[in-house]
Structures are given as C-alpha cells and as structure tokens.
Image (cartoon, rainbow, N blue to C red; front, side):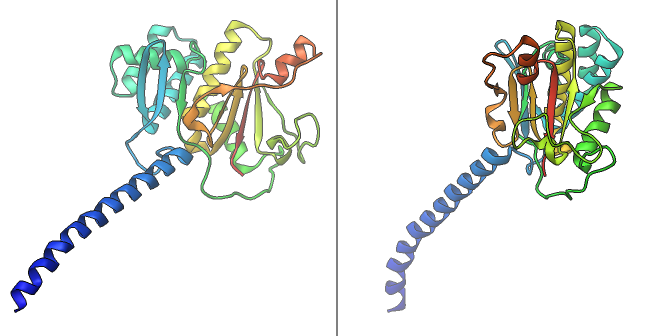
Length: 260
C-alpha cells in the first residue's frame, strides 16, 4: 500500500520543485538588476563597470582597469605627452589592444569629451560633517589631494575656512564642504581638454573617492544615474553675460562633490 501511495505524491512534487527553483532564479535576477540600476557592479569584482565610446567603437573596462588607465593618462597630461605616447602608456597599464588603448587614452587625456562613463560611485556609509581647516569634509579633501597627486598643482575653489554660505545654487554641496571646483580659465581648446581629462579621471575613480557628482562643459554625471552616463546639464542663462554663462554651465571649471 505504501508504494502506490508514494508514486503520485512524488510525481506531483517535481513540478512544484521546478516552480520554486524558477521563482528563486527570477527573484535573483530582479535583485541583481536592481543592484546594477542603483549602484552599478561595485559589489561584483572583475565585472565590466566602465565604457569608453568614441565614434562607433566602444571599449569595456573593469573599475580597476579604468582607474589604472585614468592614472597613467593623468601623468601623460601632466607631462604633456603626445597622443601616441599616452596610448602606449595605457596599453602598458592594462591588458587591451593597441587600438583600444588609443580609444581609452583619447578620452582620459581629454582629447575626447564625455567619452568615458562608469556605473559606480557614492558611498555605503556616511562620514562626519566635521570640516578641516580649509573648509572641506574628509572625503572632499581626499579628492583635492588626489587630483594634485595625479595632475600636479590645481587652481581650486568653492570652499573656504569655516565653510561657504554664498555664491552657489541653493542646496549646493559646497555649503556642506563636500564640493571642490577645479578651474580651467580662460575657456580654450587646450583648457577644455584638460578639464575633460580631470572630469573623466574623477568618474573613473568615483568608487574609490566616493564621488557623487561631476559637472563640466555643459554635461553632468551622477552616481545615482550613472547607468545613463553623461547627461546634458541645463541651467537658466537668460540675460546673462558670456562670462557668467561660462560659470553657470561649468565651461570654465570642473565641479566634483562627494557622498555625505
């Protein structure tokens, strides 16, 4: 009697097991998709997190590769190396073809604008609101130091001892000491390239430096919407002088702010 009773029960259990497994797989896919949407692949080491798109060619990079390529490209900018030597330095730093290295170097040396984007950044933990002597939080101060080490002396602003209370848009991270402006004045082709080298360096290192936002040359990248890459940065410039427009649209400076 036991044998016949167990046969139908076991047969009926199999579809239920399959359904449970399928449901678990679907749930896992949805969770991973949500993680990628809000924070990129920062919890999955070795997975493609950054892309460089120039024309019809796209190069995919892990976060580690993007950081290394950005760092060697910053040294190339600091030393004024040619495009050929810059791409050779990138090829030596990461395992990609010479052609891909030329594409990556063209972005990270600023020769190609808003070409590199990454799906990472921000921070999982809050930091203290305490400001240092310059008026910056610990993370913002770390970004300032990092840029100087990468590119050499910088013309920076947007902060002051004790903090700033005016001169920026309402709700600006500058008022919390979480933002730094790096100036590239006057607005010229050469300075624009230097600005894009800096802006894309910050995006490449956004995870390590807890970067929330980078704005330059009428474009904006944010870690919360990093899956969208660089977006147009629109502000009201009606009845403004060319000099003021350059400031409002961030044509003459890179803005970077960090997680709070």
